[in-house]
Image (cartoon, rainbow, N blue to C red):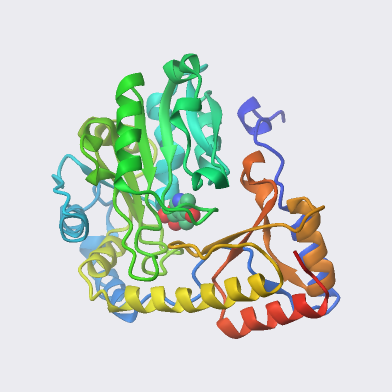
Length: 388
Ligand SMILES: *Cc1c(COP(=O)(O)O)cnc(C)c1O
């Protein structure tokens, strides 16, 4: 049974070796402290769970949902965009529900990429942008995100013959894995670049609500002209601790939303309506649970960043996301340092190389664990003599 080339083309799973070492450490009785996964550890707020329970009882929700999402869900998304970003969306033409935003991010290339086309994908970056491109027969062209540039891509460094062959430009701010943020000036430059080369911008906005120190990340759709050239992917996963529920959406340019809808109509049959009702409850508030989570992550960030700095690590506190992106000590690669941490301290981090070559020299700490565990981790590093 020979698998297709697109399956063979999936890059080797870089975390496989580390996963094996974690399993070995656990089997040997090590109390493993994991900063590995970006999956919120706290439960979904109770009022959202209650709305799922109510809606699940209603037989009207037991049938096939509408493909593009319940009108009430799309309306709730539009209302939320108006309230949060001052962006007006037409819920009928400019919003579509997704089975988690990853689903839409993986599928959008099938709408725009023919074999031989290029997509511009950030490096380091969320792996789904490149994999979706490969599945559509396209070629990911990595645009480097460098610390000196605030982990923003330099559009002027992209060769014009590459840009001319490119179809989609993926962006993601606040950024996973670097924790970097972008302002409207940057998004405006991106819109100009997309206009120049007739690109569709796909902005992944999964982390706009997880921000610190009073900072409020913007939406890409706030940039002048953004709606003419692109869409934004959004998700309830990180904002409301709902990764397991699989509910997100895409919004923005109506032609792109229509193309994605046409594809999805032929692949999936939408999101369980009871989950969409729970999503409406989430988007309509109260906002207090979101503010509470931001305070929780901010305290964890502060404890971790201070702890790493005390060990000599030149790391800056991120303004947003659930990640701290730290350089590795001199003489290490991201993989060798990840292995050293696990062997000497039982601490798990993600090696930057797992997000692309541009991630080499860094490791990612996720903030999805209690502050006491973070303190214990820092103390273990100190005792093990780990220094930068
Ligand atoms: C978590 C995450 C998502 C959200 O995925 P869902 O499928 O909505 O759960 C999207 N993009 C990035 C960069 C993420 O880290």
